[in-house]
Length: 210
Image (tube, rainbow, N blue to C red; front, side, top):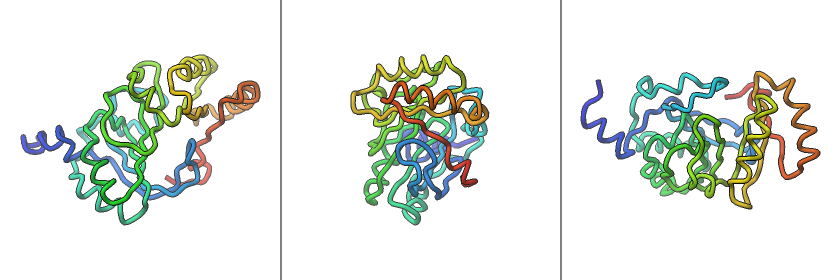
């Protein structure tokens, strides 16, 4: 059982349930192909059936780690950090983003947007899910809307979500990996007819990197 001191530190965002951290290429969306240090935070109750990191869902499996240690490791690798999960906005992100910015690091987040915003972000990638929709603030903040397409109904959902984001937000449709062979031709046709969208692919999986 965690001590009360640890519980308090997590509540304040001074410690976070770190699942893993690694240096690789951003595989998806607007910044694909760019080097970045990924910080994956445990904990998520959005529950996507196709999630490829279900082991991140239970935050109790990932020990609270001091943000000072997280930042110390991050600055060894890159001037760009991507905070992902799990669902990072379940936690207070202010201390982490403040500490990273003090080191001159650009910070991106990948989030469902279902929780209250915290932290200061240089790039905000919003990936809404049907069973737990984003907050109004997340729609307004989004720099990038990344919609995962598992079936044709997801295109309807994507258009609904695109109506909620700000006018400058970049729009991406990404095939769910296990359905990619079926979905990619659908997305190609869709983007040709709806050129406000772009196709995003999980290029890191093609490159066989994390």
